[in-house]
Image (cartoon, rainbow, N blue to C red):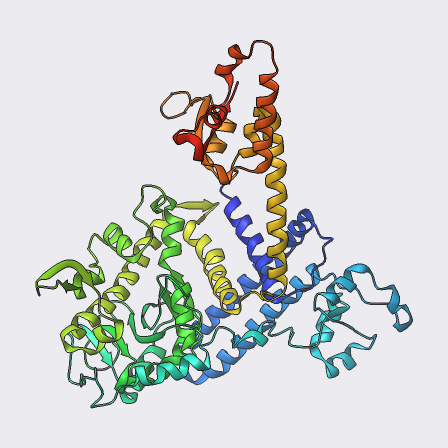
Length: 589
């Protein structure tokens, strides 16, 4: 059982990579075939991983000799690119299903799968039989594909072997309309309403960056950091309502806080152990861009809480965060799945994890910044309003607490990651490996793939296809409900025609009436009366009731059957209050 999570995650990762790379799959493959191919791929993955580790070792050694750093880094980058290319091309060779016609004359004989792929938007390109030297001179990618036995590939448009999703690189960015709307909101000038001069404000234990000179000094220190250091990062965002929209393309990052541990010095004279706070509002608008190179450098490990939100928000600012070191939300879920609020747990939010794992309370924003709403008489009411993010960051009345709040999140993320790493290392997984090895091997790269997919999205033809599907779905639902009612009528009589399939109570009585409740030990009712407005009763149900009434009236001793008649018959025979309603009786034997 301990091996299963690894197998499932590896399988899911490969399948999602297929979707990510937009490979032209046919409808003919089956699950066993995919599993066999994934197992074959694991050998390539292990070889890639082991070689990468040896290259990392050489790279770390080269840091002792600055004169050779650039050369070794270039060799490392090229070697790593080749290894990843080998892995990708192996992936393509295992899953490629587009066949090549033997010749131009045989083009009409292309199988249905290829035609289906072309119809779906995957055009195919035939690789002509050439020498490897000619292929290399013409197209190195073709030579690699031929060496792997792949005779065709998608062409046209944007597909590229070395950069298969490069065509979608700008997907998920902020729209031009939103940029224009944000421009006056994020760059208040002296004299504007809501602007405050906060250049002289200092917060103990925090290194604040608000201009290019300060940013250059801090970035230099960050690039000199040991690659083994984890940097916990957190963003604060304005102009976003998460109840109605997601982070992709929405919101503006007002500030970023980074905590690199108790021994790290950011170089602005505040000493080691401080938290870095990068302002990105008003006078400091655009300062975050000076850190773009560091955030996009995969040598330095950044840790987040809810990476799926922060990475998208940073992408909105034109920064593609790389060097993913972990997500404390994912780690907490792997370490203990019972924290879910669906059960008895407190959830996986930063506030809950801080209190549980660090034994220190993280105050909610309303408790720190909340302002009580005034009643009509001027007294304070019980309702609490939260100021806007930009107001809390600008107003000197809130700014100090706001900076401390932002930094507290980054420090909490750093400390939670350390605690969870220890707990995961103490949990065995497979042979000599532990769950932290499993997290690094599978879940960490998997999270990065998922955020890439979220950013790119899935093309949906909402205008035509979905509209037509909705019409068909409604017709199908109507037909299936009718079929279900007809079946129910054979089981319980005319009441089945009046059954509402959307009522869980009615369905529960029909399907489980008379059964024993596993919690209370009591038996459920075998007969229940449901009052339904007459206009909600289908005509066929009323006709069925009438036929039953007529049949019962023709029986010799009609009186003895009167007690078995449904309530509907009694109501129809009276003129009193029941006249406007019909009661349905489900009698179960």
